[in-house]
Length: 261
Length: 224
Ligand SMILES: Nc1ncnc2c1ncn2[C@@H]1O[C@H](COP(=O)(O)OP(=O)(O)OP(=O)(O)O)[C@@H](O)[C@H]1O
Ligand SMILES: [Mg+2]
Image (cartoon, rainbow over all chains, first blue to last red; front, side, top):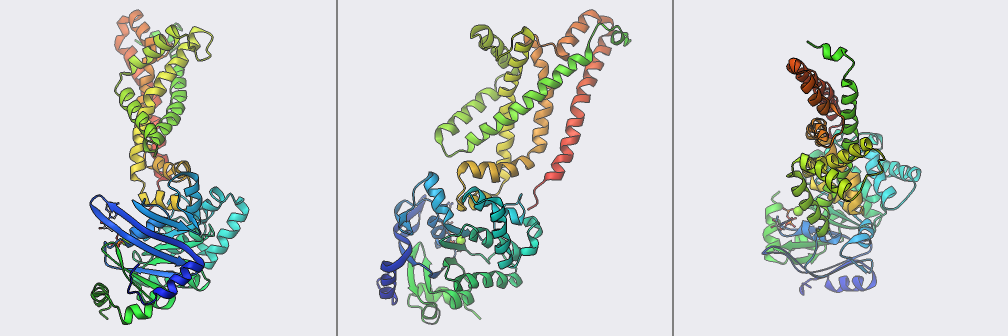
């Protein structure tokens, strides 16, 4: 762990009490590139963690290892007390408990919006179709795209597609939601409609790991900011501490580049 | 010049009907078999991938005539496998369909595999992230999208298959090519007329296939 973290004491207490996601000593390479280096991170139930850092620092990779879209070379990842299995049915079951929202939405292009949200419930959770549709419509209403239910993804704006993607993940009743730059592919005027949905989720107590450069969101919704650089967690702090008074030079340098206004 | 058609001696339509039936059963069979092969070739299980790759590379590069003679001489005459047929006609037909499926399946597999490559990886990742199994990801998300992009190449495979059914003549299946051979022997004076009839027959069989599937391809294209 980063020994100089100001919030370390409280974090460890929380981790011991009620950690939902725990990464310990995780390492990963892409060939010669050591993309995740001795990552230790625990995320408490209900906590919202924003991961921030320069391009190529390993933020997406970190996110993707949590539901094992990427394998790890060493270390352990546990979700709600059970370690991520390597393959097969067990892994699929655990993945269903981890919702993921991608930068490029990745809605199923050949299925309608409603079908996108119904699919996982019926095929993975074995919910009956009528109940799944009812729940899908409720979720779609909640994220504000209820009227688009019968359209295909390509007929929706980016902001609408991303909100459908959030509904699709929520339909599985996940224990934790991962967001990998959910607003980076969006036109500026659509960013807020997605952030509002995420804000609302955070307010309802959803455990969230969010890779984003949206400072506004980080300040208002995050409990903790994790700053990554070169495959390492360099700094962890509350949003106020991190943005107003970053301690590491890497973080200072990074913030000076993105907070130019 | 075309009197041989009126003599009632030759059942041209009946012979073409055999080609239609050969095409029909082989098309369904090779679509299924080709999909299974494609599934193997993209599967996470190394043994399946190895089998799929080896099978496709061997069978695709074997002349169809050899495969069909192999089915007849090897399976039936040597091993006595008759595929449930009880007379010479049925047995020959079924063996020919088997050979055609074994062969055409490899082309369906390769067409599908190229289609699978056009489906963005994010589609499969999103499906895996929901907790779907490999088989579910393949059958619910990847293949339905892959099929829509490969209708044109599959149409070519189907047209080739339609014409390849004439190879069944080598093991004595009474289809158009066999009848043509017989007619050429008997009606040597009308050689070109005989050719014209059979060539036209195949155009009549294949042209609508191309037109219909071209229309289908446009209808089902996935918008991104
Ligand atoms: N599949 C892969 N194969 C090889 N290298 C990869 C792969 N995926 C990512 N990398 C490399 O790993 C490093 C970390 O990538 P990652 O996508 O996690 O960074 P990131 O912090 O999310 O960056 P960005 O802000 O650009 O999204 C980069 O150098 C990237 O080029
Ligand atoms: Mg990234």
